[in-house]
Amino acid sequence: MAALEPSTAPVGSRTPPSPSRNRNSQSGDDHGNEVFKIVLTGGPCAGKTTALARLSAFLNERGFRVFTVPEAATMLFTNGVRFQDLDAPGAPVVFQHSLMRMQMELEDSFARIAAGTGYASVILCDRGACDGKAYVDQEKWDQILALQHLESEVPIREGRYNAVFHLVTAANGAEKFYTLANNEARSESPEMAREVDIKSQQAWIGHPRHYVFDNSTDFEGKMQRVVDSMAKIVGLPLVQRTPTKFVLRPFTDLSLDEQPAGTPRGDPLETWLETALGEEPLMVFDVEKIYVLLNSGGTEGGPPTNKLVKRLSGMGEGRESQFHASNPRFHHYYL
Image (cartoon, rainbow, N blue to C red; front, side, top):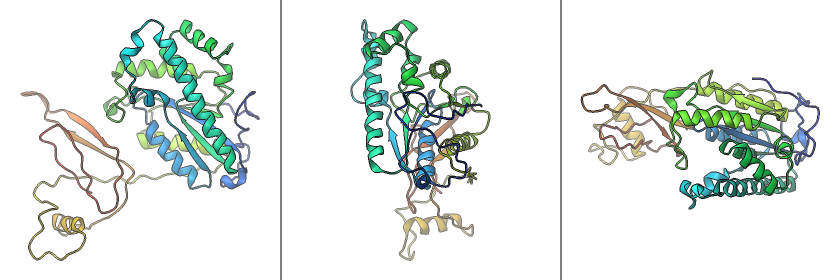
């Protein structure tokens, strides 16, 4: 992965120059009220949601105000728009132009608010203005640019963003983890995901800070590379993150609602776990995300198959972590 380090922001940028030249910066307080605008893009199931959460926490802890611009396409498809609507003559151009305008207006609104806070801010954009190019041919893309009164895509590619982070889909290099369970608005097969991913990369070629994060490492390593690149852009020192992994095991013989007679009153989950674990030590901790690889049993008479289930909701301390699946052999797992 390589990226250019320009001495100034691209011409026509709506955001100020990146202070990445100042390697001694320690927090957002050192950057006054500068505003950085970063695009997070990539193919389906690439880790964008996790990257957005990880970057937000990293930057907030270091004094930056962080604003997250939601993906405009997801907003449309989860609020009435249907894929069939794009089959009508001229509909793809109308849709992509509307999507571009909506995305840019959201970004500009957040940028105005961020600039008004008086604090160093980072705007994380869930996709950007050029992503629509991956879903139409060149003729339709030229029509979209014309409707936006643009002679070329340069102003909305180099001119709007300090950097573009492209996260490669899990369908390319981490196939066994590919799933669309975390985004109801998407339906791509692994083959389609790889095709869209490549086209998305090509749509941003030309931006001087176009970072591509592949699946050459495990997922945690991929997220660390994303954080490290962000640190360089905003002028922060690199901070290594060390993950801790735990093995979850199923408990099917106990119930939180049925405590043994004579059990002292207190935290029912803690009491339940102490009973289940016996002499094993009890650890209570917060988690960011949980993954469970379970045996689905396969088809009748066939070999078992593995299915990855990702729990998206947060888990507060002292609460059960349940994973739901349609498989009747599925167990509840607890930390």
